[in-house]
Image (cartoon, rainbow, N blue to C red; front, side, top):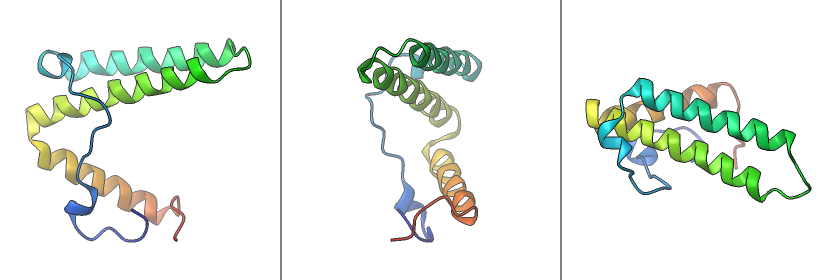
Amino acid sequence: MCGIVTTLREVGMTYQFPRCRFADTNTLAQQSRKILQEAQEVFAETLRQDGTDEEWVMEILDVLHAAETGLWIVERERGPGFVEDMKARVIRKNEVRGLYEVL
């Protein structure tokens, strides 16, 4: 996805994890607390490092799963087009900042 994003189709949402039950029941506030909890677990695992990255990577993936669940909640409330539009806007913003390597 490097280079200028021209259509929403280029940045459509592709989730890495299955939709979990909390996508249908949690509020955004509840899910925000879950994302924070998972991020705190990443930090705790960083302090606990024992020479392997397995637990740290699992905690990072838990953050991603919690964040994706938050996006599912937004889709439930605002529709999938809203999340796709926000993703395109973030990519454009970060392109302007020079965060992406141009290939």
